[in-house]
Length: 259
Image 1 (spheres, rainbow, N blue to C red):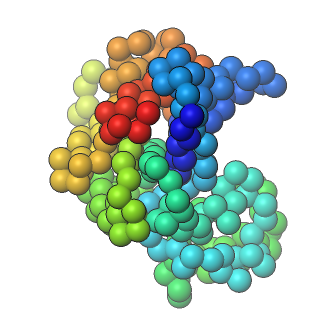
Image 2: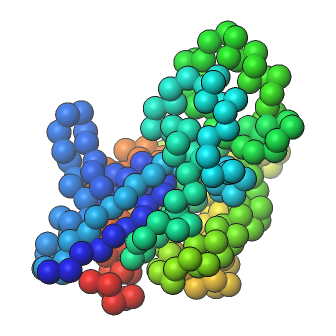
């Protein structure tokens, strides 16, 4: 019997496929061990999952929650301050590290005007009037990252992980099929969601060529299996989608000799 420890820092795309997907109160997909039972009998995996909000937030983290945030910020649910400011991805014992580009594609972090750290405030409707006033005074919103800046951040994250341990690093890309998007002429249009995803996916290919990280090619998997079967919407996978992506993760880990 062998046991893998996987450190997975990502959001629902990573958590649902590797750990657990619930639809309502029912378990629709039970994670990576469901695949390992068939493809690698005798091997089990422990998935340590942390949410994350943006590569820039991780890189600028001081490693502990700043005291002024702890005093002002309401409960952020799954994007807790503890998770946002955790730097465990750089040194927590694990046999593999799994990340995702999803946060960088969609999230605009806030930057502290004086101390320069970043964080994600979550749903602003949960903030008090006083808290929102403090937020506006203390932070400024950053623009959405472009793909080049994001990959520069990922390069630094990869280097940071490799300083402490030599383990496979896998990064999820995104499916570029956006339900309802049927554009056939782009004259005068700003960047669409689908094209933004494509730019990040291509940039991730370049990052892989430079660093040797492995891409979990969600875009290819969804295109092959059909979005109507594998996706609920732009970012959320069905149980069948989670299984297909998880099987690809296991295949990559097997190529590294881990199962």
